[in-house]
Length: 224
Image 1: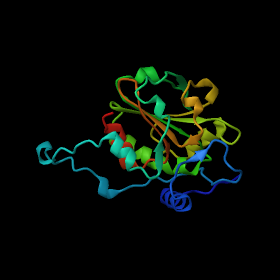
Image 2 (image 1 turned 90 degrees about the horizontal axis):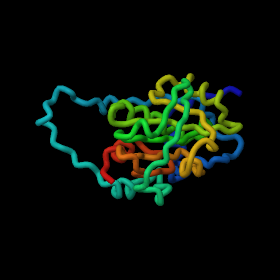
Image 3 (image 1 turned 30 degrees about the vertical axis):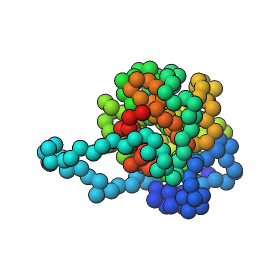
Image 4 (image 1 turned 30 degrees about the horizontal axis):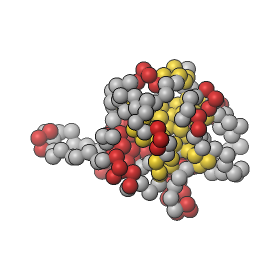
């Protein structure tokens, strides 16, 4: 099957207009979903930071409260609320480049786990936001790990081909069976689904639906 290239902006507008509120895809989508093999990174020249300005010239921007960020959401909603403040269960996965990742090794940093699939239009539309987030916040502060659960429509081969066709993806991606993951990660029913884990290893927030870049960044920086 040949899949057409989907531009990021078209996907976001089409999904939001068609659904009103983007709350992602369910694990068992209807046959004949969107073609999502390729993405195009969105760039914004207005977002370039002025690194020549002295720190004293920039007033401090207060961090948004997590509850305020949640209340402002229109394309996503909180999920797995009963897990907030609890230790995030550890796990070990191999990414598509055969590098092992364990959650425990990233303690001391904020971790964003993004659960997605190649057949999920909102998941693909969210990827450019994640790419920009990776550019804006360094790996010394934020770990991003894309976790794609395998199924007949989302095979390891298809996941690898998707990433190979989109070299702008700048964070590790895994092709993993949900059977290898502990709760609550193996209970995910709607995607994209993200878990934000604080540096102390506790779950700060879990979300279901497409998160725009400004809110991703605000969640990462927000205090619990």
